[in-house]
Length: 329
Image: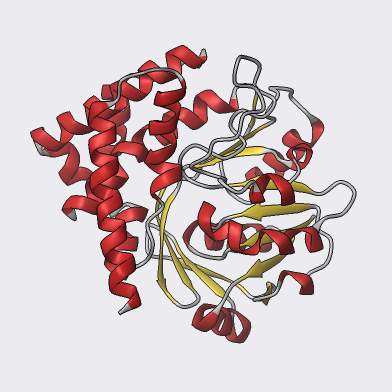
């Protein structure tokens, strides 16, 4: 299978190494020192036990036009970064090309093929100009959820912290051949994967934790374990997640995991820095709208009070503004 990983950072890099070493024809979009290292000596994956593997067969470039049509395009960039390169994505499309978005939080396609009063509605916080919808046709999209926690330790080096699940599913709930085949390819690469018929319910549970733990960690500098072990921040996360569960109920999404189970699961990850905290420490723009702003918007759409979520959203928005103004100096 010809697979292009658009963004060879933590999760994209993990997929790149595993898929390439499983025999897939993998190309990666990367930049700067990371691209140079991949070109010169491949991409290294350090496993949780300290062992490492290297993928040396990757085609790497900073220009998507160099790759040609693909069977599968994995979008491993943050949502605001995809907007910046969206007009280049058609270079990768063939007649049957599937696009697999791996963004954290609520995705821009959430209401596409979703029966109900909001079917087809765009979430303004995620795609305000309609750019993603314009360049990523909904028919190509296969929903996906990335569960692993990983870091980019250095140029050309990805470290897997924990986790091995990548779930996929059609937006309309169909168990399609393409979903089954992509799940099989991920499984052959050493991941736990399967094709779901209720992708949004599973996605919500993953996003549920991100919407609370990411901004709290960014504001406090705390790891997942620290947030969960400190009673006030654990209670704040719980309040935010209860608000989001009210929204899910109004949308008809059935959650099979309780708030306490989701918090306990995050605590078990241990002393891991969330992606948003990593961005704070690196001085990068924060992924606040997919992770928390989208929940605020869904609360407004469903007339659901979300005081805790809105307060944290306002605080982390100020933090993001301060980081952006600092970067301009």
